[in-house]
Length: 260
Ligand SMILES: [Zn+2]
View 1 (cartoon, helix red, strand yellow):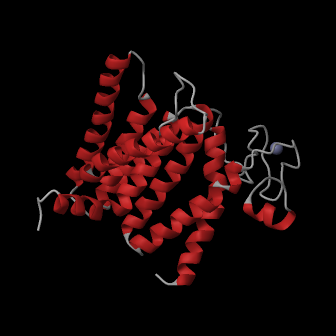
View 2 (view 1 turned 180 degrees about the vertical axis):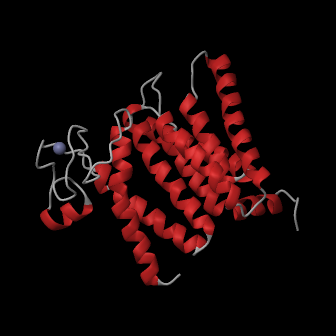
């Protein structure tokens, strides 16, 4: 893929973010097909891209808050847009014009939505995950670089492992530590990654969660008994496994003496 085509994917990612954000902000309401498909982060009104904190608005007007309600929760657009754009570009660079690129873009889109809902409301909505699982099931019938079974086993192993971890830690610490949303999300992730990378992604998500927890602790932001949303770490772990998992697994096997 050449530079111009990559730039197209960057712009595509940036311009699709308002739709993803609108779903993330409005997941508990009726999702009406609205135009412009952009919701103010206050969640109270539709807005044009130019009146809230989107990249175009910031570039053109140095806008710091919504022009209608004054809401200044800028990160939902000002951060989500470049992140989605960059992830789209890397996807395009990594997969080129292959069918798996479509899977990858849907994967990223779903993660961008659930990271936001988990951060703001500590929830990974069924309204988002169920359609995502159904869509990915259909995709995998036609797009499967590995055997279809590998992806089905990924869904079972990923959600099953997380359920097991949840039951065990619940029994040990007498506290629910794994949310049902995380478990259902792993059905979707398993369908995307296949069984080997799904298990790796759980491992990577746990490491990311541990680093995040220590960082909170060091920053003095951790309170005892506090619940930390795991969705963002799952997103980081599963994206890392998706793109760099294969070489990671290979170098580990070589290190452990299993492969030449
Ligand atoms: Zn507003």
